[in-house]
Image 1 (cartoon, rainbow, N blue to C red):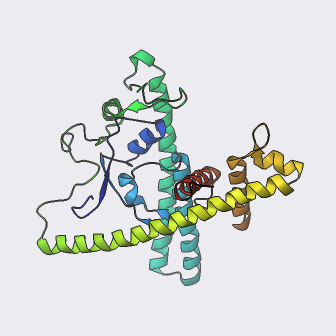
Image 2: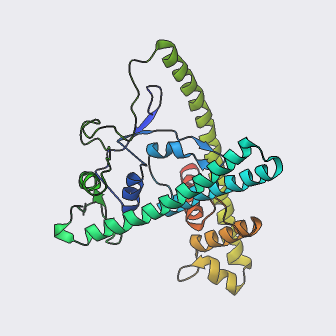
Amino acid sequence: MIKASDEISIDFSTSCTRDVAVAKLLGWMQGPIRRKYIQVNVDGISEDQLPYLPDLNDPIEVQLVELRMVAQQRLYEAFDADETLSTDETRKALGDAAAAVERHTKQIYLAAKYFRDIDDELAKQENAQLRIDFIATQSPADPYVTLSSLRIWAKSKYNITLFDGFSDPVEDGQPMVQLEEAPVGLEQLKSDIAKSTSRKAKFTEKNKSEVSLQVTFALLFEAFLVHVKAYGDDAQREKFLKGKDKENINAMAIAEHLEQIAAKANKNKLLPGQQRKSIVNRINDALQARNEELPIR
């Protein structure tokens, strides 16, 4: 629920990628109003925040795998607890954890179905219900679909109501994103505002810390580039450098290497957030932060 005390961001996009289209069909990224600050716990973004995501930082396949991996880790923990205590409470927790893994598995299959159906519809070309935004589309392999046509298609094909601000929120019945009921009690509103102000201060401090960490990461990245150029053998240069004169770092190769290290340290199981695509995105974010904070070399 978006509360009166929540700080917001606005998304007035009129088209989206296939990844975002699938995310919307799964109930994520609903409406033009999103939360400016998304709550993140130690396991990543919690599921109840998904409708308010301002954007997809990672491909949806990465997000779905991470959600299932988190649920699977909780399943292992619940199993260990039940093996030790074997109470009604631990058995219930074990059943709930197994159900969560099953739910995320089904969500992956559902996302695959949505991708297939979207591509099948687009293949109809001029007869397709889904329309392509040719101005926003940068690659034929990743067309942008207009949100108005996606909304109509989702309703007719799946009876899914997407709320993207193109009509009254209650036109199609209960919206997927609940708006705050009004009026709100004065004391409750004052309490929400006080909590929001406190969260804002924490997020601001966290953002400063994250930027500093990103800059440090980028500097380490650049130091690694210098080291490989100066002291690396031919195999290392071939693997980690790219370009005609091997002047640039191969971020994907670095990400694959780090993914393997993380998995090996975790008994050959991928760690949430440590897949190569996520790492590449963080590398790009770090380099951007470094350029913004330290533009003069």
